[in-house]
Length: 109
Image 1 (cartoon, helix red, strand yellow):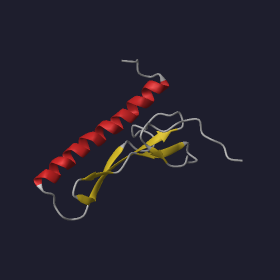
Image 2 (cartoon, one colour):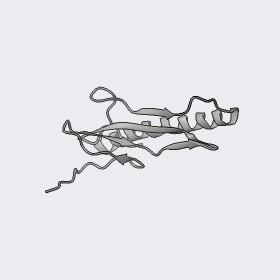
Image 3 (spheres, helix red, strand yellow):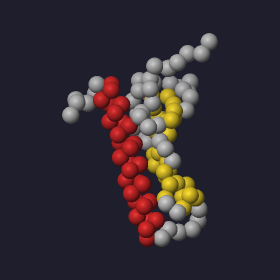
Image 4 (cartoon, one colour):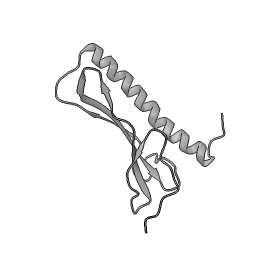
């Protein structure tokens, strides 16, 4: 019999399977730089069984990863990368905040 875990992943993420230690990895969308499909930015975090996003004290903190070749960027591509990194940082901070609001640890705005 298959059971469903009652915790939903953060909005806009794809969740991996639950691990025996009661966590799973969630991944945000892969973001690319215009004109450079070989250079991407990805976001990941560990979601704990209570729905919270790990701050690094249990499994690992949220991460932003770069997948890129060994060649440089033009100035315009570097600016696009900077914008992608800012968007990715905002996304992973939002996952943690969303989980805190859902869990009731942060008062509503």
